[in-house]
Length: 253
Image (tube, rainbow, N blue to C red; front, top):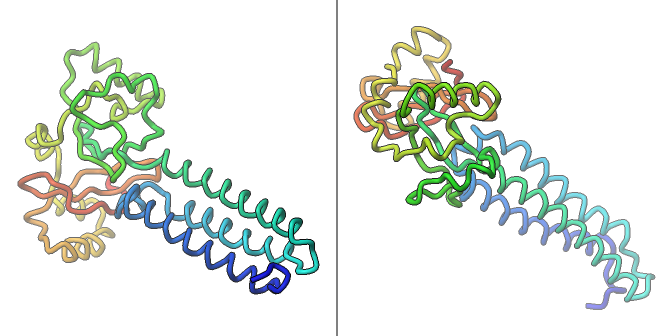
């Protein structure tokens, strides 16, 4: 179909349709691969991503509606539309890169809590310290890790002071060890659901709903506080294996 025979509304609708398909692909990457539930909510990416995508998807077709004029010479019209598409793709690529760089990569048992670690929280100077058997930046959602015991008081004090200066212990790869190796320590640090309800009665209903949704009971489930850049929450764990059951936006601290 010749450019000149298209009306503005049709051109804009076609642009919107392609934008919607692209948006669906991006959403699948973000919410199914990089931020699988419930990590998206705990990482605070949902609102930011939807805002970015909404603006990008809407603005492109709107600009097309403005610049598309059937009376324009074919070459000029093609140039204008190419510029619009390139700007839209550039903005979308930048936004997707920012989302990718900030994806959650590990859920780490940090002695008395679970902490979410995101890719851009691990300082570059620490990358060489990653244990050979571990992937510091997995692409398919967070892996479970734990922090090993400190070698001595000097190492512990160094880590504590660094944490006070903003470098959390969980972003230090030299302290990482497999989650399965820390199960006894995790279960020792975890607390019964009844203790959380006693401390925060308002959590009783959402906790019971979460347990029911996962076919669990309070007797077979324990909890640890959860820390992430989006705030604080609660990590429900199996009382025998310490495997995560659910992450809830309930501040257990």
